[in-house]
Length: 404
Image 1 (cartoon, rainbow, N blue to C red):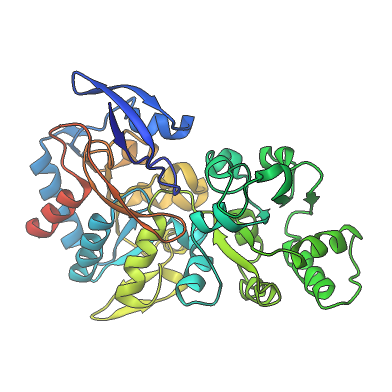
Image 2 (image 1 turned 180 degrees about the vertical axis):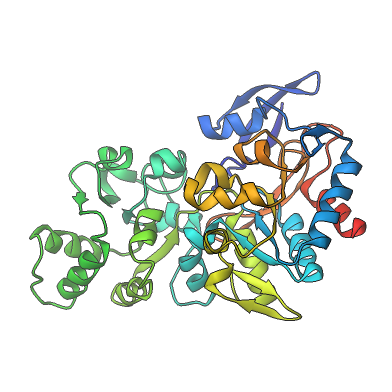
């Protein structure tokens, strides 16, 4: 039996026991279903190909480099399921190509992560929450389904250093959402249903209530404000439901946080290393996504993958650690039928099925090592536990650089 780090989500659980037999995963212990599926590997393994014809890995890498070199406006996209080492190499590759680089955070949690990196929000570690938090607010986040071990390892259920009685006596959890989610059913009695897009209105009402005013809102907002005001150590777990709703005015959450000095904000990141990419790009450019290198890094909303595809402003796309065909609307990804797509992934995906070039990589944390950044900003090492012949995502990025 060996211990590994799970890359099923951005919790990066490090207590996963794996039984290996004949160099294959036989059994996974402690992981949630999502994590266990990731560790067991691909049901349908990606093979190297060029123009839908089988090729060897070197030929696929050389063809991908040729496409990127000849493109006038290439984009490198994805990165959320890639190691930090591959991300750093990818940023170098984008600089050499004068390319656009972007990731999934440009249409989800990037707004909040950037504000954390710029120190506009107070935040903390998951261990701080487990040991100290007494009020937990899941806002637009169904953690029980998206990050299945969040409540059991770090927030609601554990006995922490200063919360020895756990959820029975020491913690209050509330859910703010448009529907009664699985998380809401666990946090009984403290579910606050809001209409779609109603997050900003609730934030304004809470700010009034916290300032001693009587808000023109459902009377339960006073109950919620009272719970938040009494917190010794609170946490708002901001899901994409909240982020999407306030994307045109994200600083309103900063204003609410300023009225809650005992609260921390934590974006509920999905992909295991989305925050890693945001931090690596931020160190290089001062921004977390939507960058084009034109001798210097230029940040522009038009460099977001959604806008670039909508405006048809790119003529080649490299996808790594993501599957845009499964996550973006068909009207937006239709442009991919007109340009060469390069797909780097361990498994067959919808995106790989339309790609001009496919390059299989090892499953990070199982077949290859590296590092990643947990949703709270902690760097976590990913040891490889199975010997194999697949190139890591970092090695593929290095190969592309050498082939240019």
